[in-house]
Length: 110
Image (cartoon, rainbow, N blue to C red; front, side, top):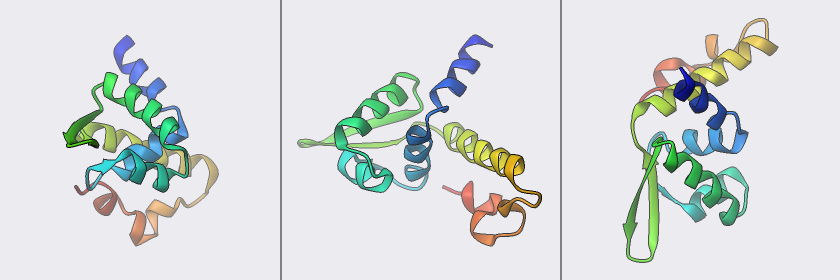
């Protein structure tokens, strides 16, 4: 239970959630991720280090560039489910229940 709770603590940061969602379909470099999440590459690197230690994200080096990907589908599913649950907290009829672009089938495909 302690390790499971630590996974939620790692996912409690909005930037890390954005990184996980950005990696749901493809592997990306730090600079590309920094552009997506609108943070500095140094900041993104620190978040990626934490995600790598938790084994949610894996890295592949290609020359001088490092590309990151999700280590498995579980982090993606946790992030998506957290967003869906958050929508229930703030909306009477959450977007994922009626918007096709947020449907579970599209958000959870890899």
